[in-house]
Image (cartoon, rainbow, N blue to C red; front, side, top):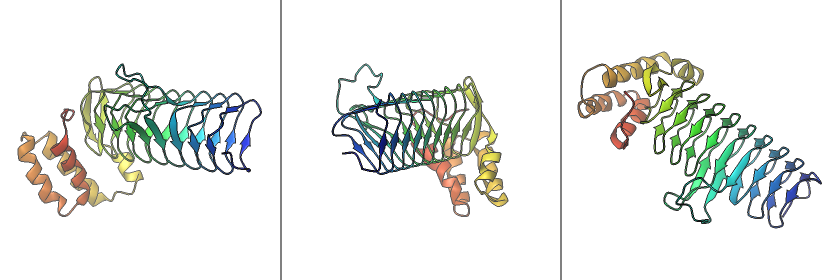
Length: 262
C-alpha cells in the first residue's frame, strides 16, 4: 500500500505489500521488502536496503547504503520473524546497519525518536536506543545493549553485549565499554573508566547548578568515598528525596548485572 503522495523513484524496488506513508520519498536503487512499513514524511535516499518486519516512523532521514532490518549476526538466529522498530525524526547516516532482534531476547531491535546515528554505526540485534542519543561514526552497539535517552557513544567506540549506557552519559571516542555506565557519567578508555560527570551535556540539556552539585556529590559518594555499593545506595536514596535525578543512578546500581565501570 503506497500513499498517492509518496514519491518512489522508478529505479527503486518496493515489493507489493509494503506500507509507504504520505509524502515519503524513496531514492533510486533502494530495495524495500513487502513487510516493511514507513511513516509519513520519511526520506529514504538511494541504495538503501530495508527488509523484514521493520516499522519506521515519521520524518526520518535515511542516507545512502544504510541497511535496516537485515538478518542479525547471532549464530542462534534461525530465520524467525523478529522485528526492527524505529521512531520519528531520526537521522540515519550512510552505511548504518540496524539488525532485527532474536527470539532469545525480546525479539525486536528498537530505536526511539530524534536520534543521530552517524556513518557506519552498527546497531546489533535486540539493542534498545532511547531518544535524543548520538551514536558516532563506526560505533558498535553489541547485541542486547541499551543506550538510554540523551546519551552519546562517540566514534570508534564499542559497547559489549548486555551492557547499558545510562541517560545523559557520554562515551568518548575509541573506548571499549565492558560494564554498565551510570547515568550522567563521562567515560573513556580501553577499558572505559569514569572521568566525572558529563557536565557539558547536562548543561546543554538544562540541568541547573543545584542539580549538577547534587549529581557530583552522588558521583563522589559512588566512586571516591571508599564505601561499598550496598553502603552507598541508602545515602543516594536520601539525596534523591530532594534531587529526583539521582534516582536514575540508584536504579542502575540496584539492577546492574554486569557491574558498573570503575
